[in-house]
Length: 260
Image (cartoon, rainbow, N blue to C red; front, side, top):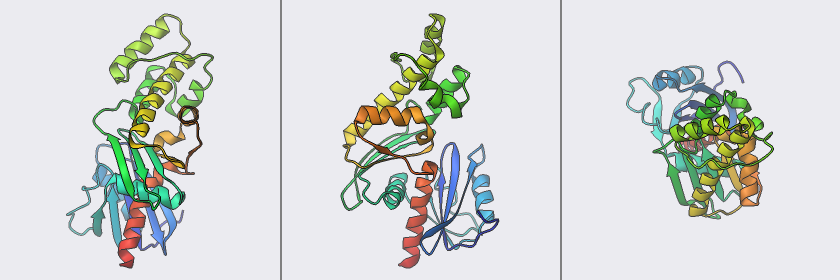
């Protein structure tokens, strides 16, 4: 990435755990960046935008309204996460029909028409169950670094059932299993299985048509990816940088506006 790239438009995805920025010039990605959201997401947004030169920004994510109405800021538009992920995933995989995004605090399942329009979607945004936050919380409980949690789960030698998806009750259940001598890797796999079971149920409610694109931070987790493919009986396509799909979609929307 260049130190201070010049581009026409930018997309910014303001999520609960991180903020991603993608810049397009002539419709091509020329720069991307990201920062943790922290307790001051507006400050983090400004820090990302201060590093670049753009004329238009389209924001998405749960904090997409933060940049609106700030004196001296660039022209800012907003689009929903559903729209952004549809645009971003379809750009990366032109034949994509189903999109799964598991982020820090929510999960989205989106079904697209053959033309790429949103046909149906479902979003879990009221509970951390089945999200990245749930896996992060449980990794801490098992004293496994989050970035190693998925690989650790795949070392399990048997499958066990974790019945609760509430973080508090799931931690209690994991503690009880450990007290009975269950291997931590088996517990970790059970937790991943619970996440995937919940996710697959959501996907089936909206409808699953391949190709399926898996986006969001949890797409980096190898256990979730493998268990999803096993449960669905089909390939799950993970972009090289799954965290950036929403920001890419927002940037593509900004580019379309610039061409109108």
